[in-house]
Image (cartoon, rainbow, N blue to C red; front, side, top):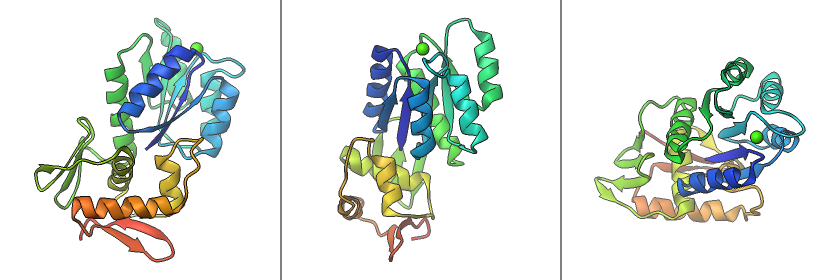
Length: 220
Ligand code: CA
């Protein structure tokens, strides 16, 4: 899962990015409305954290432009304390949730998990397929009740598969959702990670779809 954080206060932006990276999200950052709008327009984010007060173009305008262009990713806006009008404007512009500054990182993380879950049509914090269970709130992965150690990339990949069951996912889509912007991955790395996941999870649920990519088969 890949998240964009658009926030002009650099220390807050870094804290938010760090908190989300700890949760195994790939995180990109933008520090003004123009750059944020551009990235949200061209990159396939799974969620965007958007400050309402931004230089060049404010967050509400940015959000309105995305929605006018049919960009549907979940957006959580950060609003200034006591500004109820920003919340109303934000929801009217197409926001999915908001947080008032200052906030606790634990609350931000919980809201992010819930938004990503809902946008995938999932109701539970536990994602499962066969005997593989990923608990999005603890970050633990278990196979038949036993905890399995995954690297950060393996976790990101498994999480993306579990959020998109039974869908054919191309290698380039997987790359775009598990790496941050400045990373220049070799497309073979996805094959390597899939191979390792199959081995560690001891499962055949990740199918290769020849010429197209992979599919998490919930009936395997
Ligand atoms: Ca601001």
